[in-house]
Every structure is written in C-alpha cells, then in structure tokens.
Image (cartoon, rainbow, N blue to C red; front, side):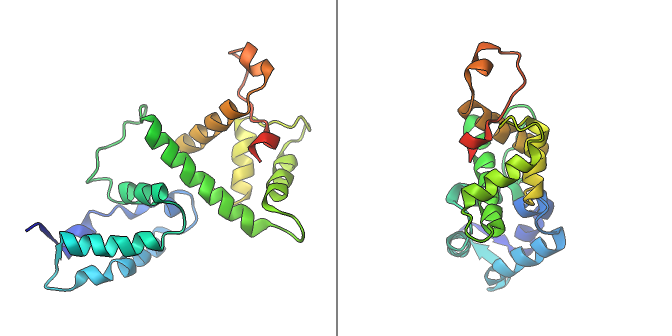
Length: 194
C-alpha cells in the first residue's frame, strides 16, 4: 500500500513555481493558503495519504480548475517540480512548449474578458490594446511590443514562455516578406492573432 505523510507531501510543493505566482497574478503567501485549503481533506486519517485518497482529492481540484486539462497538468508539474524531471533550460519538447503557451493564452483570454468595455467583444478589446502599442501603425509587433501589450493586460509570464508564444504566433501570421528573408526580425501580425 503506497502512502505518504501529509507533511512530506506538502514539503514537496514549490509554491513560487505556481503559474499564478509566475505571472504575477497572486503572491506566494496567497497561493500557499489556496493550495493548503484545497488539500485540507488529505490531512485526515493519521496524517497518511493513500493513493486512492490522493486521486480523489485531485479529481475534485481538477474539476474546479479554471482553465483546461493541460493547464492543470502544468500546474501540477510546476508546483511539484522536484518530483518531476527537471526541464532543461534550452530544450523542452514541443508538447511541453505548447502546454506553457496554452496556459498563457488562457490567462490572456481571461484578462481580455475582464477588460471588455461597453459593446466591445473580446477581439475588439484585444485589437484596441495591440493598436495602442503599435506606435508606427504598421499592424505588426516585434517581441517587446508584444510583451508590453500582454503586461498591460496583467499577463506576466517568464521570458522563455512569452518568447515561445511569440514564436508560435509569428509562425502562424508570417507574411511573404518574412518567408523570403530568414534574417528579417520576427513580427507578429496582430490582426491575425486576434
């Protein structure tokens, strides 16, 4: 019978790796309290957590997780990173990269919904903010303008993940100029992004 003590399990959590801490949405202390409250049901039965109780608890947490399943898995992998393999700084596989990007996209979608004004829809709200940072009115952005736009929405993420998201969307919005010149700076044509 596989068991772990509640205290040992809780000591494995790296709260500062939680996605909401990483993007600046919540402070570490708040996330600690949130996770402890969510896992409080595991503290029963003489401080021993069985595999079945662990699964039942995390099914409940997953059901209420605000994004998608991949984002929930990323949350688990980040908060219990000591249990999972360390991701090499320079090489993560395509699936892992996509999970990070999807999580940032989910945060951006939620922040965009919160910033909708009057009769605007989410697309118009996002377009309005991209245009605000497009000082030359060229309908594309380079990396720093993209980051500034996301930060204006309150979406803060590590540079590496933002860079992956920017690269993903640049590939989807490439124009003939970028395809012809491999050395051209990466540009995100934001009308297609929106």
